[in-house]
Length: 116
Length: 109
Picture 1 (cartoon, one colour):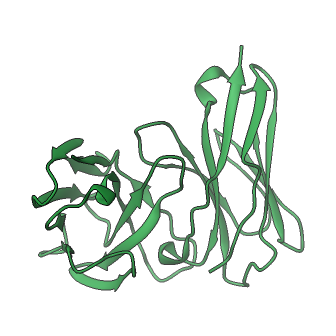
Picture 2 (cartoon, rainbow over the protein chains, first blue to last red):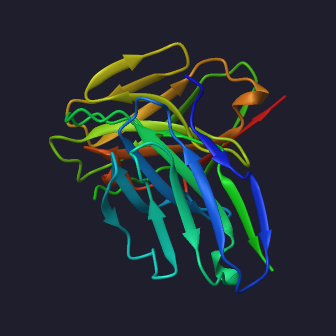
């Protein structure tokens, strides 16, 4: 178990550029979540997948955001035409969901995005 | 989505026991109570999870009264490295977890 891995750890970009983040979940985990966290706040839910299916997207996820999990393993989160308000820590979490109600999420270290 | 209320901050000294209480008056029958710890520039780390009564692991204890409207995370003999933000979550599965601002614990020497 190598844990949830996120790359890159830091990303600095100029407003209007596109960025893509990658998340590699714990290998046997079937659920994968994306969260966004700003300074002093708790993480906010963005979207989640069960295997390759994207089951829900938050209203926070504007049309500029897209997430994929093509083979039910790693996931990517892309932000197009970045804005300064997109600056935040983007967190990925995974879980082994087997239908019970005591799901445990395991988080990666996040990708810190700074939009200049 | 169940809402939780916990203190914004707490101070303690090394070696003391710290108890952080979380209120969750509208907890649902299927909801579990889960606590996470977060250090700066890292993702939250799972600490403990429970449904009722008491749960203990190598890191912490979780006390849940019979009405389940609150819970208390107990950290025995804290050290400086326990300085972090602690989140109390209530939900049946991950999508329904709502992170509030958490409790910022400062452990002083």
